[in-house]
Length: 313
Image 1 (spheres, rainbow, N blue to C red):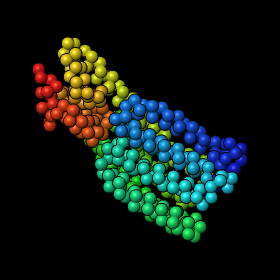
Image 2: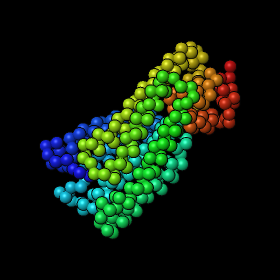
Image 3: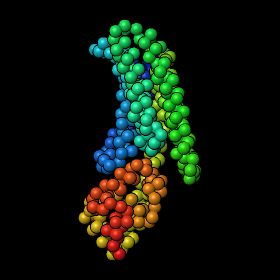
Image 4: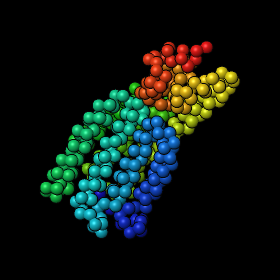
């Protein structure tokens, strides 16, 4: 990586001012989102997003700082960390899409393909071989071959998974979300490209952080829609009169969370898991997990028994 020199660096470090701006913005986003997560720790989508933000900050900080001879860390170690942060963040990206967007066809790649074809080459060439020969340029040429090829293949797989997810029941919001997901994935491929060629820190940061900006917009948009649905559900629930009081007592007795109550009410309306998933903007697997928790709390084994128990009249 070629470091940018001159007045655009901050605090006497190698960090470009644009990199610093992204670090500050992502730190602020991380701080506010972790407060929301602590308030509602069952929100797994927010957890995956927090991890993605954390890895992007680590990538920006190490990629901006290293290598710098003024830092009291051996330069080879700095380079291992800098490249490692890029590989780590790139490896989590497919897992995030698999979990956050419920792209089931990415499961093998997220759990097995990425460790084999991204992390393993990094450990072999950028840690073991580099520690032996100290020739980073040579190690990059050989160590990036498999990751680059795999990144192109995985990019195509992700595109197909996104297309499959949105090919049914398409509406305007889903179409815009699909386009945004495509735009968020494309910068991910640039990570392997920048690993092959030397580039300025400014160009690399602008390109790679475009993905997290788009994903942040997607996440915030989903969160807003989800909050609106919750509010509508609460309004509907609060207009139930005397029957509402009995339901409230029942829900408190079984210690159901707000999200579990929302799902129970939608099940009562006859919605399928897929319809509940679309209405609440959560993954289908998340709906299933909530239902299993509800069954355990109420000591029933199916939806019919659940509805008879909670709505006896």
